[in-house]
Image (cartoon, rainbow, N blue to C red; front, side, top):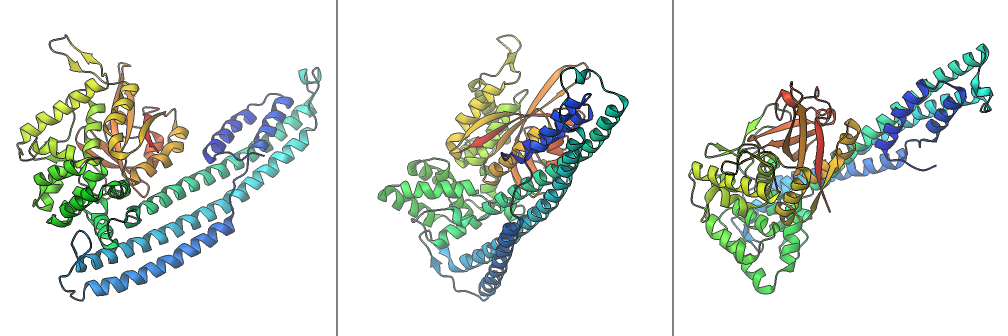
Length: 526
């Protein structure tokens, strides 16, 4: 018996429920029951999961004790001693170590809970699946062998009663098997989501380079923008840390010495982190040096305003849309340019050099909000043309009028891939099962710091089709953070995403009432 994907098993059994309920002949019912019995059972070893969960929780206790020790040291009044290749304060390193230990403890604890939940769900699913399989087998036994060609034309009252009874029992059995598949699928996706997220929290370890000390790596991973929860506003994503470490290792000795000097000369941890982020985005040391001249000595608030288009002030538990602006002008779209507008902002999220070109102009000093708005619009129109977007109106007053999926993939790969290291592929979403199936890949991408474009659609009262593009940029627990190129970010639940209800991130026109609302996503692939 082959092992199926949990989502495929769920989907197949759901279809067989209808097939068994509608079976109009003995032979059709036998075929449907045999197909239901052929679907693989939930797989996994509960004892192994329990053992791993206990090991994680023991490590969580060890990390918690490490946090307590580091926290006591950080509060003891350490002297102002500089350490590391990039000149960081020892007191800051110890404080960062305490926070990192706390995150490790939370990660191990969270991983352990995820595995225990998976083990419990798997046990329940296997039990329910066994009951369903037993009923299906009993129903199959009641039917005996298949009827011959002529026998299948007619059945007497007794044969009809036997078939009806067997069908009722089989319907119960396949329903139980479907319930078990749903339990196993939901638990597997939740475990994958949580484990991927906790793995991405191992931030200092993501920077594999021998060119920086452990103290340097720890401080870089710990640095956040001001203005919100530090863990929701970290400057370097897991992908940034990994890419910048590889970039450091690839530098020539001369360039490495220059990069060390730039880092050592940074006036704040935030400035240092943005220099590393620019290296992660694929820029040369010459380009990083030019960037440094524009941001050197700027305070953390200035850096956040100019280099990050999104500041997360609302916790995932909070509802409502949060405006994202620069000097009062929203990071929003101009006309029907939702696809390029989403892509412009996504690139600014992963590329601080590009972000500064938009907010500060060529020399980084032009803070005029109207000038920012003009530069932002120009970039949106440039990407619209780059993706061969459609236009309306006459040649002298043409205005953008949307972009197809080929154009969206093209500009995603041209504008985002060079700065994240991966490429984009389109996935059509035909319904809830498709959205549920792709969710773990989305959450893994955004947990690593790689934005995922998403398209939604609706039909208006006149029957006209309308589409809109947004960007998934974050994930915490069972919530997705969505950037809408109307200039807002919103936390949306997994459940609403699967249902296709993104009205919280947009408006009521894009609710679950519009079947197939989420119709396409673009997953970043290794």
